[in-house]
Length: 254
Length: 317
Image 1 (tube, rainbow over the protein chains, first blue to last red):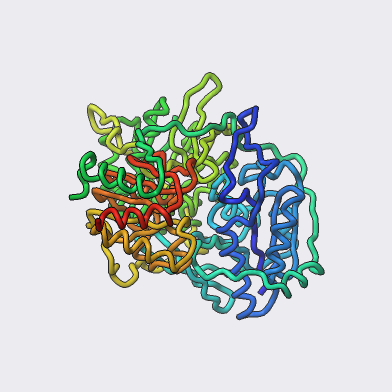
Image 2 (image 1 turned 120 degrees about the vertical axis):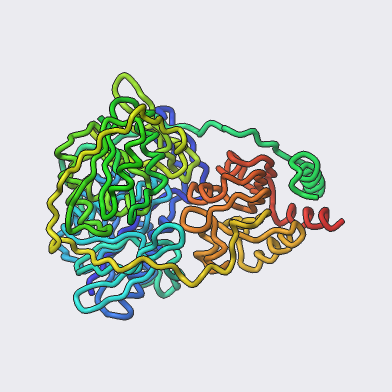
């Protein structure tokens, strides 16, 4: 089975975003970046399907030059080769622009199955996968917790809200957005890291002439709506104060 | 005109649809609401109680239950016929499934997970969280947009009711059953949930800040000292450190205990929607800018591995 996994590289979770002077994006010059965690589950699922069924896993990303680092990480975990649509503008682009960039580089590959994470930890659009499927003209299903491959088709378990699930049949080729927690992630081995150095990352330019469908006109820190009593001091003092407040002020402890 | 696509299943309206109607009313201008699927007559009649111009009862015969392809096919026709300025939907799992495809098909901007709108001279801006809720962005779409609203961001009871029921118009859409690629089976629940956190008076919730599986025991000790149940944010259950039935948030349980103690929980939106109704919220986190402090009544910035043992000692003392 020829499997593509789409990845995004995002600022590391413990990085504190600060707004730039124009208030249109964050000052990410000093950020460290990592593989978007929801996409790591899609990668793991792709690798497991390949191990079961044979074929190859191609990791695909649209973003600036730094993205090759995330692709290299995916290759080290076991992906076979990579596609990188490289452009600085893609770092802040909307989901449609990213989907268009990915589609232009992926279309000729005729993948049987395309996997993406649920959403990204930076802009959190939760749209790119389904838009990509629409642009590639293939079926899609979202928030998937289990994938069963049958002859020429998939049977996938969709997570619904409130603890409900549903099995859905989808013909191949198809795109699935993978729910985090579907599997246990593997990490790169030293052997994998060495092997990744020799694997191919093919670069593409994004399609010309796209214009953004949406723009951030102002970015800011949310205004606080609730009064929070902050308790300082050493751990023992803070604990004493907090328990006293919970007993006497909030009256939620006896 | 804003067209709201309400969500219903088997004749029961998803409550988030009311929130989206309220968001549309607050954005200003005339509002129409459309509802689709088997049994949509009852929700259509309910929605007609709101102060809206019209309720559209969409009939597309092959569509009994939801499928991505079926809904996109029907909604493309509806939106093309009504040509609204914007289309609003609740940010449900269903909308997340089909709305991006609908946006591509219609060539609309797709602004997701919004928490509000702002009216300016140049048009509507949509407010949405980015970077895990640490920042908010005012977003300007280029032209008409398909906009989804975060569950709970707008109060359902803020819907303006109409003086008289709004007219209900039946709209027919043609959907080719053979072109629907997804073949859904009946929804089901996993084996009955062993833990009902919704009944708990006190909850100690564990987030990523707990760092390691063996540290969960510390949270369990605090829970025992408080007479509380242990809950968790999604990443903890994803990692298998606690079973899925301990998960609190949009894909887990929604809780509203008297006391909610969040240990190393950053406060991603998906978690907050499941616990923000708690009466008293305590947040213990080393990151002073963690979004959990936005909704906490009491906050302690510091190392939970020092503070939690001190709390246990204090409670037992």
